[in-house]
Length: 190
Ligand code: C5P
Ligand code: MG
Image (cartoon, rainbow, N blue to C red; front, side):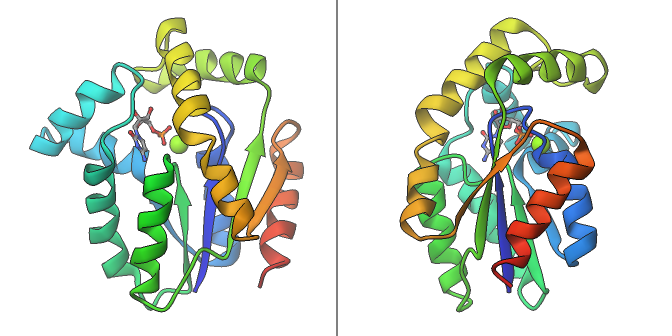
């Protein structure tokens, strides 16, 4: 399987770029953020728990997220591959993903890190907030999300560097140019 982790801070373009990548490489898409938002819309028990964290800009606990991914992966084995968008968000989640994939004799093929400076992230998130209906539409939640990224999510980079599947991508520029760089990174491991 071709398993891609698309990584980067909130507002770095993971969701936008995933749309093109799934088509080009014929991958299944797992966005934990989308899954959580669907649980919230469906007023499920998981949705209620998730909402309390998301509204504060915090991370939903690892066990909850890992359980959600476990359910999804099972259904996707046999596919050409998967793009993981917004997951793993912690080193514990990255380790769990390795173990889940190992059960299917598979692993993460490449991790692409979209690098975008903080000022640009804030601009993008405020703009998205005008229409998205998401809770990260104000400076307080945005600042919180970025600081959670710095402290809890960024260490995931070193995890994948050690596994030698890490690729850094310049995340500022036209959507097409960034798409081109991500495509090259994925092609280099195929
Ligand atoms: O991935 P996305 O940016 O869409 O996630 C939106 C929110 O969902 C995050 O700010 C976080 O509160 C929650 N989330 C999480 N753990 C993940 C993915 C998303 O807690 N692995
Ligand atoms: Mg997203």
